[in-house]
Length: 620
Image (cartoon, rainbow, N blue to C red; front, side, top):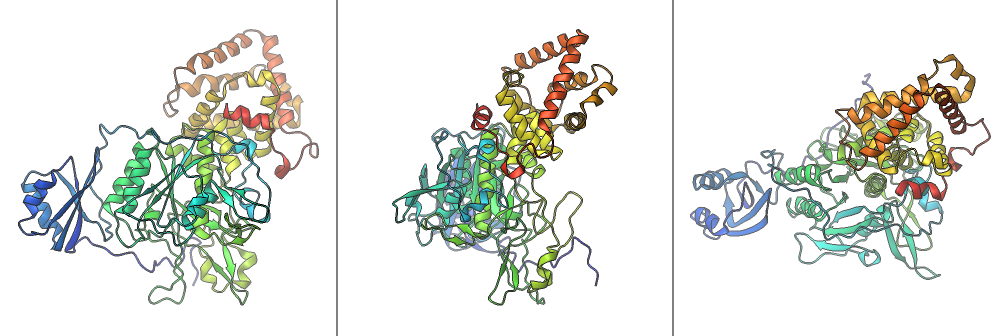
């Protein structure tokens, strides 16, 4: 049978328990406003005399009250009685059993953006980042973190949600917050490793004393939110998200198994994160694609399927799968040398991040281990922090767009490995959709330095977009080295322009067309003579003129408007002087030549790193 290139045996083993029509003894009442617990007891106590009512959340727009009884309650009858008594019910849902029910839209009118009022953001630190075999995840094959371009995540905040607290004493946490638990279990180091890979660990015991482990974004400020073991309830996970958003988290990552834990409360929490998190710009939520290798009923093949009803399948979540040392989908060998996948696949998978043979944060000398989907989600969270550190004003859609535009493409066929596969069905599908998506690797492998370049500067944006990463790096170096280039525009204006280009396809095409023209001129500068005098300068002026007027671009901050006007005035003055205009166009050609030097005159891609001055200017 011939399969379409997008097809695979998409049959999740379990879609999770459902409680829509059940009689339940533990309910969450979501109301439109505050509810008096005594009133609930009066209304519902008539057929549940042992009722216990506990307020969970009581601030706009979330009003959750937990209602528990010694005998099962029928949600529909409870809702009827509450509405009849005048209670503005949004929904009633089980606190323990998952449900695919979509709640009424959360009314966010009057809800202020969530700001970090009591969560200190850390500044840049001096990093002692020694290379090692186990830290390949920051280099080629990994997410390509070049510190001069990416920085270290200073000024950003990470919330990690997990169900254990082993080894957390080795982390420099801003805070450790229990949610739904009186005592946090410490059975494993899962949560601590998650934070260490994303940020850092401060103590590693070894023969030479203590040393630090450096993760993806070591200058980010982490908090840990500990929840009960999944399966005990479906309330604690969304409650932890709400708490992290309210505290001011920029990125939330959870790698504990919450498959099948969908609930109306989780829908509320994700809506709050997207619309009001990070001062209204949106808090990113990262979940792993998890792993399910069991065979569904009637099949001899592993499921390896991310269910549509799982939290990681929600479009507001960034779902991540692990990549291997070669940058492709993570495959592992059994004792017989046969290859098996280490991750799920599905339509909602967003990106890949490293998950194979990574250094364990708390072991010295270095030991490598499979970090799997959990490690991949930590890596992805770290990359998000780096990008937000470079441009804190990015909205959540802009952040997603920047990361997806800069991924490294992954070969979906894995043709070189097919002979060793335990089951050839495991690597289906073998095709890539027109938008670049494949169910195994999403849109591709995250590339931190490309994404950070893209969001930092409009010229770098254009160069990265057309595949000229090295030219983008040289542009930043040249701009730092030559004062006249550094004075063209401020870093703040550059970051705003990058956001505008993410939003406006027309302006994006315009600046990329200009970059392609400059590339042609760099090869043969005499080509400028074939163009109309002043045409090159006019293209530059059009960008300066039109981007602030774009309906799609973000509003220009009042403090940046005089700077943009001054740039336009200088350009207009140059146009009125033909000799000056010609000289400027020659300077632009000379600059293009420096961005695309002759082959062999500059280091190759893996060696071309900007100077320390570059990162200082980017962060200014």
